[in-house]
Structures are given as structure tokens and as C-alpha cells.
Picture 1 (tube, rainbow, N blue to C red):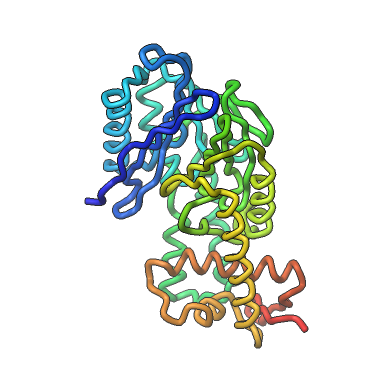
Picture 2: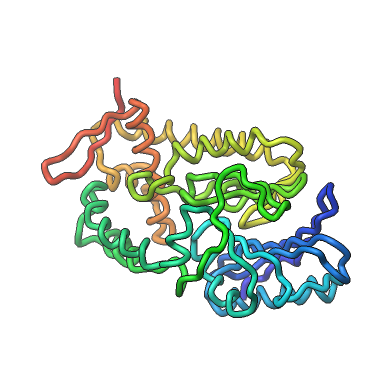
Length: 338
């Protein structure tokens, strides 16, 4: 069993209590949900649950246990019946797939970015789009159609982001002030529909800012709003925020030096871009670039790094740093320009 961190309490400059609820979203992989509370602990005037983990039974059990700890150890008299709001930061299964189970417990209205609404209300829409596009993506990336990579990408195309659809009462846009509590910052890149949420001097940074890892990216050609171009622009949007003293991400612990984390992420992607350019001395497919960059690649990393390599090559080609041509079979070939 994965050992979970304890529930952590954060007090904003305005007196809002924000509780980090660590969950086993999947075996050996944790994610954070957040309970946001205003008003007296014995009679809260506002409570919201931000993200709700996965549909995995361990995740749901951890959510119940963490919320019970908030009540027992911190004296917060919240309840499912009087919960005011459910917020989804982005429609990925480790953050949103628990939504249908939570919807069965509370009538609280759901808020998510407007671009997330189709996926949350009709999960099969994204599944159908992936199914329709996967063979073309395999060809574009130069992935052998009978390879293990191709099989894994086809299996991924069959995945639903959540088990069943849930209506979204409040579509969000950048700059919205949700319930007078959350300032919405649209941060596409990791997912086109991702939002960060500012509460007083605290930022719930979803998977946009994480304390130890860069978030997985896929190319924009796979999903509108995804890709490195959007991710870097979103880093700038977050960096421009004022009065934020700490960021809490969708995984891991708090980031008091969140601006330093942005600088580190920018530097990391500068190094990644340089590595791709250095590898592409001759025309290479995405599949070939992956092998050149990661000769000792572990299978558990393969698909995420394949996505990332495609996102980097796409970005560099758009900037003119790489040239993109086509092989006779339709595979894209990338080579350093100049």
C-alpha cells in the first residue's frame, strides 16, 4: 500500500482554510484533492471540493478518510448535503474520474472550464475523437503499426476520462470569479481545458505547476489547447499573478517558491528543446527521436515520453528550429534547420 502524506491545512491571508487531501488515484500514484472552507468551523458559510481523484476504489476510500480527518482533527463541520461547489481543474482520470461517485453523495453544482464540459458531460466524445485519430497519429509519428507502442496507444484511445457523464452547471472562462472565492486562470498546455484557481494569496495550480516534475505534454495536433506553445504561454500567465505566496499542485507538496519553480520549468524545457535539436542531425521520425533521446527507456515511461517528444518536435518545427518534411508513408521527418 502506498503511504499517503497527512492531510495538510493552509490558511490564506483572507482566512479561508484550504485542506490538501492526498489520494491514491491509481496504485503507486497519488493525486491531491482540496477542501476549501470559509466561515466558522462549526458552521461553515461556504465549502467547495476541488478535484475528486479517480474512480479507483482506493481513491474513493482515501477521499472519504481524508474528509473524515478534516472533520475530526480540524473541527470542520462540513457535510456532503451542504457542500456548495464541486470544481474540476481538468478532465483527466486522476482528478475527475471520481466525479460521478461524488455526484451521488452531494447536490453541489459542478464548475469546470467551458472546454472541459463536453468531456465531463459526455465522456465518450473524447474517446471517439481519440479512436478516430489514433491511426493517423501513429503514421505521423512514424510508429510501426505492429509495435508495442502502437498497441498501447490504441488501448489508450479506448479509455474514458470518467465512468459516466455528469452535468456541469457552471462553465468557466479565464478571469472569472467563481462564487466570489476562486479567481480562474485558464492554463492550457497539459490539457486544453485546465484551470488554476487563486484563493486570496494561495494558488491551486492543478498539474500546471508541480513541485518535482514537469507535467506530461502531448502535441497540439493531438488535442486543441495541448502542447508546449500553450504550456509556456500559461507559465507566463501564472507568473503575472500578484500577491500569491504559495502554490498547491495536483500532485506533491506545497510550493512556497512557486516563481522559482516556473523558472526551473522554463530552464528544463530549454534543455529539452536543445536535446531534440542536437539529436535531429539527420531526418528522424518522432519514434526515432524517442530512441535517440532515451536509449534506455523504461516501458512505464514510454508513452508519456513519446507524447513529450512529439510536443517538443511540433513546437520546434513551428519556430523554424527544426524542418518538417514527409516520408512516402506519411511519417513526419524532423531535422535541425541550418
